[in-house]
Image 1 (tube, rainbow, N blue to C red):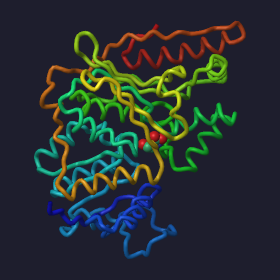
Image 2 (tube, protein in one colour; image 1 turned 90 degrees about the vertical axis):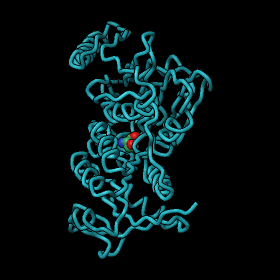
Image 3 (tube, rainbow, N blue to C red; image 1 turned 60 degrees about the vertical axis):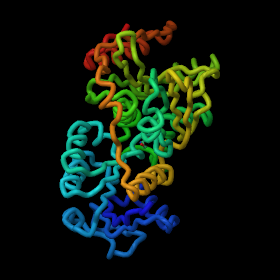
Length: 369
Ligand code: HSE
């Protein structure tokens, strides 16, 4: 097969952007090279010569010799403007921005169709695990019943280190930030929003369901205290932030993100540190389990690299489930049973906790007990 030569305009030179540059240097056989890099901050010492950099997005977007945009910035609104203009200009796009994709999923679908250009985003879900491509291609005809997983590396790192090393939540979060795992606004990680955006993207590729972030209930790990962590330890459980989606009896999709007690029988039990793990239950394949690093420069760059490589042979998502499984819809009213273990000395703390969760839950139009 004759592969296309890609000339890349890169947006962002942070942890992942730098990682991608290094990864591309190590894969010279790939027919892709970075022509220009657009960054925000002017007076910053960078590892590459100044000739690579521009501070003006149109230097890249209006350059007709650039046929591929790789968008790796963390501002979702600015990212959307870049991606939208690039698609309108007929440039193929690779992005890792899950918030941007989740918030504009439908519009991005239309843009791909209207301008007949591919938009790939494997790095947006579970970094090094090729989950989108598998859902899209391998499970094309199988009947998926559920998908459940740890899809956020930072929270898994925090939950692992607070138990393993007995360090505080804030120190573990600081480590996750220093290692380049956490979002610039870490509330997106610890509040379960990042996991929700990823789940929303997975819903489209697994079940052909398009929904909005506000329709998926998320509860993060920022409401956990020593009480829950110690309880899990005492019982031999682990707490994991789990994203879940399954078909209910009416054929609708139930989806949410919640911290969950996981027993040693569960495959997610041994998914620790920055690793992500995704369990898939399907009618024909039965159970399958994917595991890999879910955040960080190289694991994320590996997914971006794979998308770049896929573009050299004109790969694009066909959104097969969207076109075939039209009867599936997201169930917005879900009924969750939440159990509280209350000891006298924990009463005030737990009640406070319960009220917070209830408030959050009601505001998400979800009933909780
Ligand atoms: N903050 C994200 C995480 C980065 O920790 O999973 C990778 O998407």
